[in-house]
Length: 244
Image (cartoon, rainbow, N blue to C red; front, side):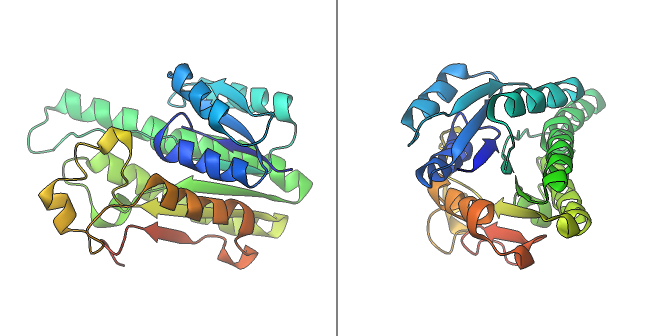
């Protein structure tokens, strides 16, 4: 049985990933930030048994190591980490003042990049000692196309892509593989009010945005089935709305 940590698993893409992995027989460590009730709802809906909840604010440097220690104490070796937790905040440089701009930049990078990078480091080190393991990082098409009203978000996801590929090179000889999944718009509860907008749909060749289950299908492939030679790849899941 695979032991898998999924961050940001209380709802949306994280919930769908946890569900897909549990359906494949994995035991899931579900991380949540503050919404324990939603995380518990997710846990109860998962196939199988033995799934465990862990709460932590991943934007704080002092929270990552304790989270990792708690997870490994409860489940033992972690075979896969899926870094899904992230935030999106708009802060247009055309309308923000300096203080507001700086606050969003620091807050966004703290969660999206630093939290992901630190947890990946701890996981990769442990996996390298055993000679096997996988890390799946959730990025965004915004890393490539730019986000004019949320530049910190796009930049933080570009940073995730870069460090993931650096880790893929560094840890491949140790049997640790790193994959990145880069969705576009996804029909989650958080963005439900946006995804039916005519401007958004006009950008979608499929005439719809991706579902959480579609993203979860790709993340599950990376976590369980992807060949070693795919390590370092960034897989787009945006319905051909942005091609590179």
